Image (cartoon, rainbow, N blue to C red):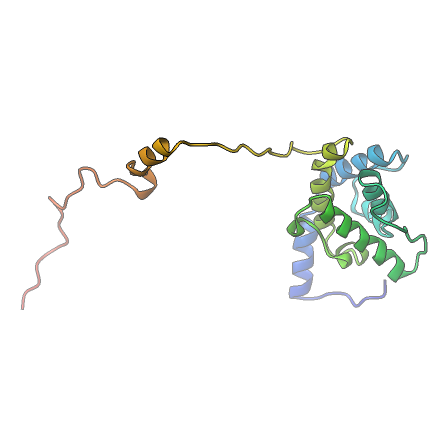
Length: 186
């Protein structure tokens, strides 16, 4: 890429973003992708390898199509920028349809221009947690399940009379012995 080098505040912000990237988490993501797609690939989590494997979006689209067959209608094989970015966008749209919250997805430029690879890792991890819902291996902690509780009217009324400790307690509080200095003399 032929971009001007960043300086000052922009460079500091970029270095903070790059510092968040974890090679261990990137390795976990690449291993999961290899397992789900059945591809034999280099799963070392260095930023360079992670970027090179995913930048054209083809592998990401294959992941979505493995989880939800036919989700990405046509995977672009061209290396032209707009075709690669279309693949990346198709992946993020597919991830949202798979249940990844929009705040855990990434912008196309985060991957294509290598601006924030950590957000790409976060998105893949979020999608990886959903793997078991599609009959595929999953990564990371198990997704929580709904635990709905039914209370009777009697139980709800009993709860109304309880004073929650979140409000604090004033038991035994008084101002006896309080001294704020001398009285005001006029």
